[in-house]
Length: 253
Image (cartoon, rainbow, N blue to C red; front, side, top):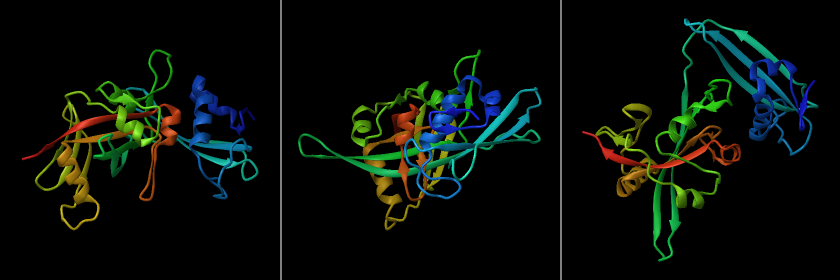
């Protein structure tokens, strides 16, 4: 039973992850907040176990694809485990997760800057490796290649200070029906139906802030923790998978 730092894992995992195994193990433990078995909080440096479910399929061209779903437990609750399931080939469905928030920042002149934000990620995380190199995030690579910037801090003031414009091919559009579209080079990455009722306590103020600013700050990358209740980007910042950029907003016709 290999142990990396305080995390025990099934030795067969290395045949799938190769040189990325240690990084994968530590990343999973770093992002986990509660034990998958007892649901109690995980504490730093306590003995943990990694449980991994792998789904494997083979594309028509012979390329093998793997999907990894991991859980972290107290070692007292469960030992490490690994399961592999072979399934018929199908194109992996990626699920976008997003949250819309408004950030404010006081300027030196006492004015308040209002910034509309879209936090956006994809599940599961998609990675690739070229020519035997390190495994790379597909989403982060796409965004960095279009002018987004890598962010090492999860503090919102730092993000507001350092986020800059992205490449010309990136844009948001709001249609007359209230559909928000985020696209890169004509490919739609995200769409959301906004509620345009002025009395809506969330969508209407956010859209008004976006129209006033004429841009939206995108906070994206891998390992963003987005639920209906929380937006946590600290794990992404620690793992170096957090990217930011200001994307112009246009009105559709």
